[in-house]
Image (cartoon, rainbow, N blue to C red):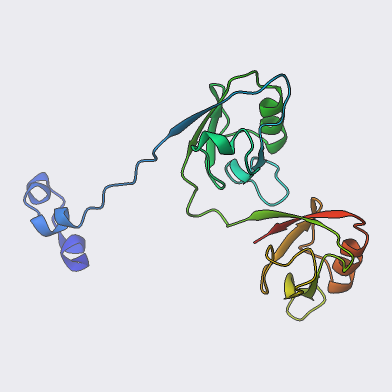
Length: 209
């Protein structure tokens, strides 16, 4: 217990003779399991994945990860990669300290086969996802609340999703909008965020938490 640890002697004998109870409470650190995926493409064909994270990423300098996979795309067909996987290396180059821009460029210019080494997502990373919506005759189909003009300031959040709109089945009430077409709305008022969304004519890409 904590008392016995605080009061133990500092000589080697007391360390050697400490109770087995302390040893039994030891939790072995989790060792990341690495997975390797080889992606084969012709010339500059898209790999069917998007990257998030990296130094200088607008949503925070966090480890690089797979933010989305295109259904039936090259990456998805490997059955090895998953959304939110953390990316360790690209074609043998460790990218754990790369900026977002450098990692995207490296992936774009990588020759086939493109070898990705990944591991399970970082449990401490915020759970972001990217949602692309195409405007229907009824618009994007959601309303928002919140904004920096509230006291205290509140995040821009999905208030309601309409069944006839493009957002139905992709967004839900309470989702927090982090960015709109790459532009952070962290300091936006509700009015400004609404204007930004209305300015998106045909499609909009949202980062949601």
